[in-house]
Picture (cartoon, rainbow, N blue to C red):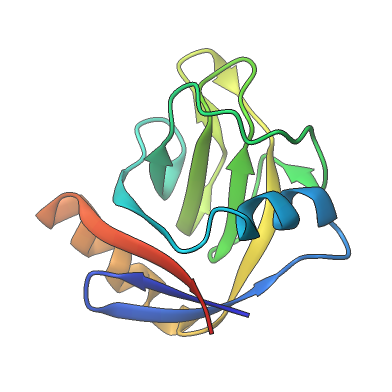
Length: 135
């Protein structure tokens, strides 16, 4: 389990190690991970962490274009830049180049009832500090 803190919001997330073992292992190597979470431009009710040309070192596994709220994706790059997608509502993962599929590697299991509120905060108040830590 990981603790995901976004501004004043605190969530507990389960690593999807059976479905995305390489992505989970690569992300665990990055912990503790700190960045900014901003409103996604193309994916609907999602926020994202742009990572540019950062090489995560994994390919596609457990990939989806339609994550449910709280199903966090890591897109390892390719057609678009590397990024982490944090859905808080209806989402179709995309970039200016079209639809993408990202690795579903983390699922919010505690605090999900606050995802819509998180989305409103990111949308109306702007970038939020985000931290991923081991529990």
